[in-house]
Length: 381
Image (cartoon, rainbow, N blue to C red; front, side, top):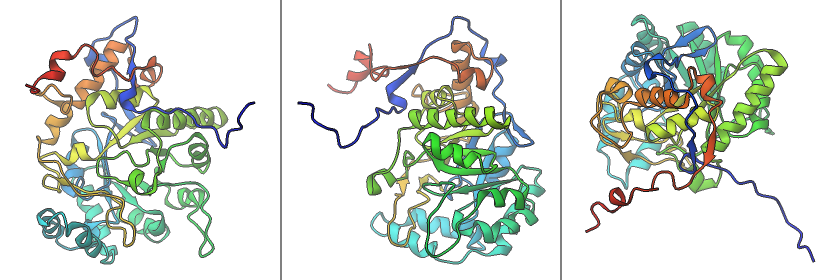
């Protein structure tokens, strides 16, 4: 007798469970093209710095732009609530583990000041940098016009889980098609992890979608509410939506894998899974120039009733330029991410990021430990 199933479950995969197959042709790494295009903007490296207060301030955004990438400034955070954000950041980093969550809830309860939004954006623009800013959906209708008037170049609308349809009895939700028409800027929306949600978001006219729910080092969404899909499967699903939408309209929407990337191999696997760019948080929070001073905390940590992030001590590793481009003396893949990407592309025979999308990927849960007996046993005696 066949036992009926209550529901079917799909097997999903994270970075540690897959490996890339080398190509039949190899390419010199320095001849690979890793440009990332969003709207009318082209970036020489496909890396975005996450819109988190420990990662991006105006100075970090300026530096990122000079190095060829893009940093997203969190307009719902400390930079727009306080005239002197450095003092507040110091208070957070010096707080004890037992008091930090309540402190963050108190700090983030202060109102956002529109004049500070304009000041922060103009500081970035006056330095000649491309300015990307992030808002949560609840604040977007009110503050998006302020960001546009201040001169922002790119708008990111970001929450733990974002869909094109939000059901509420109390208010009319944010309509992304109306937002795109109102701001006339490239709009990135996130986060999502499924083909259907990504496709529906793309059909609203956005320019990029952020992929990832709960994989970030400082995020505890998966632990608190049990929601998330491993990043390889999530990226592949959203990349499939991008291809469907491109066939429908001829418009190419960028897929940006956001969260869960710890080392160079993770980053390379994200691109092979279909990403056009990646968003990094805790990795870049370790940069000497990052405002978190060796600490990092999740965007959902200050939630007044249900915090879903944690402050973590990550230390200060190296200047941003060294983290991105090397040279590195470490062998664990935590520095020179651009070198890792170019080398991986060269070995896999991928001249461009779109070529990297076609690289064969295999299920290989033991890829990191296979044959590593002496490395694995070091320090055991």
